[in-house]
Image 1 (cartoon, rainbow, N blue to C red):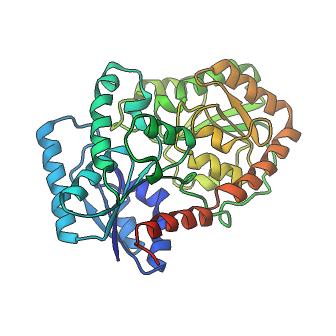
Image 2: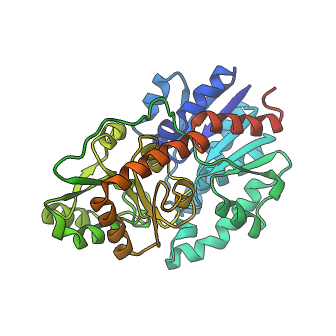
Image 3: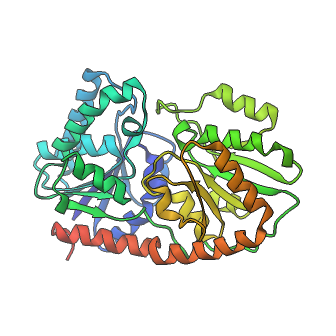
Length: 375
């Protein structure tokens, strides 16, 4: 059997779906990767998978260019003749779903890891695009052999409320999973300063502004606390943080901006607290990895984020957009190292129960079996 994995970046396929691809390959499935070109295509090939680059611009609204892209995808599907397509992220779900329907590919699995900028943003552009995106999603998801995988109950309910797909065709699989034999607790000892880390794409919707504001509020503890920001800018996203803001943070020393970090696991061994003040997520992989390593977490009481943290058990939840509450939660953990240890141990236990990648693989196999793709 052949399955095409299609996502909007090769980085996503490599960092979030490579283990699933290896799992399916071990079961005799030929997995072909497809995404716009990037630095990770060669790495996917080094892992033993064919990778097909395609001319996709994430921010493009040019109808001629988008129709050419859709034709390109249809041509790939006709040439490859896969038994199924497995699409990841909203744009790939729409284009992959429409192209698969047009070429007669019956089995279509659509994984949505959050509803994305169009649904989260309050900008005029996002509001105008929302009805069109809903219409296209409904068309892409149509069919008795189409399945939707969401990562949290809030996203599931949205798809039901919008009437985009038969509710019986929705599967809830929390996250892409983590390897709990790789992400393990460390013997990190608190250094002279309490190190706080936010690791995410540099998008305002990840709560970057609130994080910077919280760091400024806690500058009175500068001798005791250090704020780190890890992640690359994302020019393809309308919510991308501007370079001017990054320069200001670096110059003023509000926080240490690390840029893209290849080995995030190594970095997490050196910090005391993981923070993500995001407005909405699927289920954030970085928080699960941190919890698996027994790091305490502060995140928002938002869809996806609250799936990882039980408030007061393995971390703290704060309201979305509330920099003051974020600062108070961080300050509390700065002053209570015993709570950090307690939250860390509880977080590891939660990951083992709910987010181990073996659980995700098993649930994904069930979706494939439902479509007759696996025995």
